[in-house]
Image (cartoon, one colour):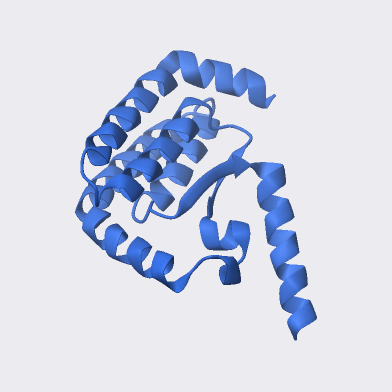
Length: 150
């Protein structure tokens, strides 16, 4: 079912949305300090092209908090603050699109995608797009490790 949804999404707007994210990512890659933001944009381009069956997860959640250095977390925080004005505008756009699509019964799956994307647009640096299975496995492993430590 995800393959059909991804195909329809790609044909009816996902391709254009992914191109926009790729262009924004290329712009940020032109600067040295913007490379992490550019990488986040490329992750969202991947999600924008084929959103069904994928999840957005923080790197600390994916690899475990102890495997992400304090330096990386501080840099991600600072870059997310720089991104915040752009992120607020994009989040509002995706929220409005989500509401518009949710009005119709047929548009509810598309609305869910826009709301999910909008949720992480406020702080995209440090996010990774992975399959739902990989996200579930990572969360399960982190929870197990947390319980074993206590």
